[in-house]
Structures are given as C-alpha cells and as structure tokens.
Image (tube, rainbow, N blue to C red; front, side, top):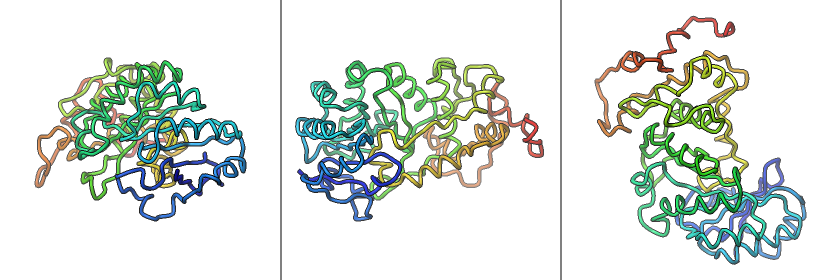
Length: 345
C-alpha cells in the first residue's frame, strides 16, 4: 500500500495523508507533478509519523484508486489506536463510496466525512468529469448524504461545492440550502482552470455574495426560498431587512477554513487560498467596503452564466439595470457612495 503525506505536518495545521499514493488519481493535479506538496511514506513509517504528534487531527484524502474502503477503514483504525486525533476523511470523485461503507468507516474512527468535489448543478458537474471513474459522482454524493448525516451526526458531514464552471448564484445558493437541509455543512471551493478545465475563474464578488447567503442559511437568518434572484440568477434580496443584512455583514461572512476536510482542489494551495480569503474580507474592514463588495458585479461573468453571450465586446452596461430592483442589496451602493466616510459607519 502506497501512502503520501504532506510536509506541512510539522506546522500548525492538521496532518495530511493521501491514501493510495500519487497513482490514486487521474486528474494530474499540481501536487502529483512533483511540486513537493506530498512525499511518499512507506507503510512501516505510518506509526512513527502518527506518534510524532499524538492527538493531532489527521486529514485523509481518498480518491478510491489504490485502496478499498475495507483497507482504508483498517488504516484509520490503526491510526486511532496509535493515538491520532480526529480523523477527517475526504472521499473524492472516483472513490466509489457506497452506503454500506459509511458505517464501517465511522466505526473505524472517522469523525468527520467530507464529500468532494461536486458542482452545484448536474450538467456542470458532468462537464468536469470528462468520463472515467468519477462519472456519476454527483448523483452518488446526493444519494449518500442522508445516511452519512444519520451516521456521523449533524454538522459532521462536509460537502465541497465547486464554483467556477458556469453556475449562477441562484444555483449555488439553492445547492447550499439543499446541503444544509440534510444537516451537512456546505463548503465552497472555487476551482482553478487547468489543462483539462478551461474557464474564467469565478470573481470575488460572486463568491462573496454566495458566502453571504451560505452564512445566513447556516445561522437560520434566511433561506434560499426567502431570497430573490434576477434574470441573471444573481441574488438581489437576501430575505431579511436591510438592518439585519448590515448587522450580519458587519460580523463577517467568510467563515471558510481549509483545515477542516481538505480536498484535492485546495490540497496544494492552502497558503494561496488563505491569503485570497483574507483579502476578500480583511479583519476590521469597514461595513461600507463589505456592502460595496456585495455589489461588485462582473457583467461578463453574469451573462456567461446565463448563457446569453460569451464575449461582450463593445458593450457597456449600467449598474442601474439592477440597482432599481426593490430592496436590492446592490441598490445600497447609493448609501455608501464614493466619498462617504467609511469610518462613520
């Protein structure tokens, strides 16, 4: 059995174990191309690796190739018997995880289960797979979720929702709501283009609006059903009074951590993404700046998601096209116009 580990195990984050080794995935991601993010670990070295820092959480990534659910359960059981902390298993596309495997993995010592990566809409997910073992993963995740939540308990199942291949904000927010309704935690994972996936990276404004909706849903302050969306599938009302939205945004909407169930997409870019999130919502940032970010619309992205046009050359849009929506958060730009003293808010 081949294993790979992250050298980050000596830092402050969780230990990371890639079950099945570098041949376990067909995606040819950066960490499998010799960038040094992972290193081989012989099976006999596993116990000393765990004992070096006992009770420390271990993230196990499993794509399915190179290891069966049975052997994986045995691996987890060994680590917990040696004194490992919480074992967080992330099963990726192609793992062929079955309902009958869930109880076995839970009994072996897996405390938190992550299911990654799925797009928020089945047709978009199919565009990510391009055939192979991962075909059908979208349907498998939704089928596994009810039983997984029952076995692992509320809040102990993570679903990694991929953003970027062309979803609208409405599609993403409704997927977030569906995950939350089952008792799982929706995590948002912006994808990066690569040699197989060619698309425009998702904008920060779009991610911020979806994160805001996710936070409101998770705190029970609103729901996808209460929210309103325009013809481009963008959220134009969060389903609560403006004062409530301001109070929520003031407290911060990001609430996204990379340490809790890593997946293959962010495995090799923890520092990059942490910096991106900090830039997205800096600590102590004025309310006015955060409200304006809710209004930061990339029109070309909006139209591409709507499948209206994919190139918008020589076309000019006016923010008034959506600012006129009644009670729209985008209309709040007027309340925080350039020159307004942010420190007074």
